[in-house]
Amino acid sequence: MSKAKTRIILAAVTLFNKKGLINVRNQDIAKQANISLSNFNYHFKTKQDLVYAVCAYMSDVLVEEVYGNEVLIKEGQGLEITKSYFEFEQKFKFFYLDTHSILNAYPGLKEEVQRQVNEAIQIIKNLNYLSVGMGYMKPEPPEMPGLYDHLADQIWINNHFWFAQMDIRGRTEDPVLKGLESCFAISYPYLTDKGISVYKHFIERVKNASHNHSKRKEVA
Image (cartoon, rainbow, N blue to C red; front, side, top):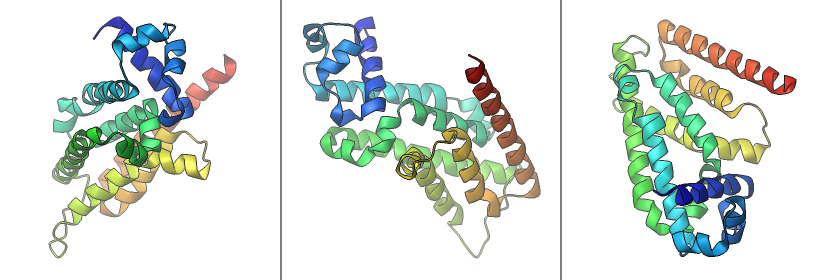
């Protein structure tokens, strides 16, 4: 991808996050990218072309920063992956605040998004079963076959719509930290004492990092 296209895509993401995808015009993006509208139109003939390119870029970042880390997945590092996913959502929050409307406006995206959703749920399932083997989660109760499949669905729903519910409710806390705490609450009944301890320590580490980051911003 050319440097100009990358600059346009990054400018689009910035404005989409601030104003929402529907409210941003091509000329706004050109101005944000510090290029002429004719140059913008040379690279992207229509806004649809741009939106598809932005979503393709999102997919690349998702693989690179979240699902592409096979070491973390094989080692069952579900908490690190979950944290990375919330951080990814924060970078592209426009999509998670308005997923339904975006897919209705650009139906060509639906198949790829559905594929990513199925992949995400399967990764959650795999991580849950790895956690059972590592002693972090209790074995699935034999009287409730498929319970952990439903748990994976619930975790995905919580994670995908996390930023939307925070926006609707006017919540201003650290979304990554609060998202992790919500996942902890969902998973708590299924965790062993070992898993609870690991989860608590991980959240405490994230909380301390968030607090230190806030203090540095105040000083700056």
